[in-house]
Length: 605
Image (cartoon, rainbow, N blue to C red):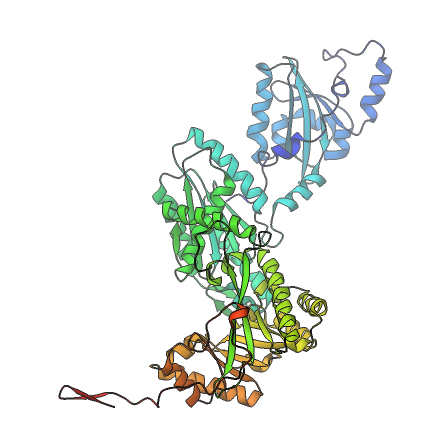
């Protein structure tokens, strides 16, 4: 496994360095050098002695024949010691093949300038990077070199992950390009393996970032140990790693590497006195095409990894034609979504929150819809079909900002008509963990001249649990504006009964899976009872979400849930079609449910 830059890796960076002037290297008295007619030998000699650049004449068999004093100052060896041994004895082993090849090339390409970098051993055992500019006259090399060790160190820092010391994305892509170019001389494929650790954030949150960092270092070391010297393992950031495997015999070998990765990470990691299991999802992209683009291969491996993670994790997935078609459709959808706001293709529908014992709506939830330009007429696209896509980029923040201002404008319009009910809007993870949520909310309220109680922000359990401390702080800032906060999707997880007590809430919205499952599932019904008791004890308004049948409505009322939301009560609709003015009577529900008993072909209740 290679984790340090080689001269090949850094070739691109050396090409941009200014060449040493050729007149500075023709300074070898007695070695066939020709001086400008206007310069005296004494002046040339003084320049040779005093320059800080490294000047040399080198025989075609690789021995120094002339050196200036700067060599002694840089490397610590005397000039006599440097001349006594072939230069390759001081060249770093990783750079030796290239250095010898360039030296021997002087026989075939005289008078051609060559620029390259290699490392020379200092007397104290350390290595110094040299940037060479050299020319051969067919009998000897005349060269000038500069010490670029500090710059190479900075470049190394720029090409490696600071935590694990593995190559970063920039160096990985450079090595992938080199591997693709070598495909022209090889029949075997190359593969990129995109590795994402499963549930790493939960470990990070529960054990702390210091433990998380130690775990990432351990993962990087284990991946490096299992790879061949020709492979590269890189860290892209967070808990994402990528392996570049080349010189493979077949596609099956690439999948075998992915299997080894999964098995290698199954072994527990020792973290302090504890053992931590760290499973992973792996996406694999394989190519035989030297014209392939490294970024395309990485994107394909990423798509395959998400498929593996979506299948439950601890799995591998190969990018294939089906995934290619899905990715192509996704890219087209992304492109269309980018234009949705400037083309005014988004709209809001509103679904009322109704008291189950009768009365006017106590609120409305704003639900974003998308009518793509040029799409077939009919129903708009539902949020689930495009918001998850938007959440992968900053586009979700732009959409969220539009929803915030549009909802506030609608609330202001209703208030001018005498309808004062709060509007609820959903907040994404990126918005909640951003630093300006309260500022954006306050700006929208001021612009529409609304009090804080005209608005309610809904945050889901999943979003809050990504970063509970930051979520709590952001919601407290929002509450200070008089804005209500509702915890959405409550009960979707089995271990979140303690969550409401740690957040500044006004409402608790029971997840639709609870409401729609408590007809037949005693455990879910018990969860609803516990959630309603928790809401009453905490002074929160409990809302049953997803009421779609009379039976669900009856049970919600029997369990003394005061407010409901769902298609049975009122479907989402345009604001002008909502029934908001007239008080509704008590919502009718069927008699309490009784089991059906069948006797001799008849049924009784």
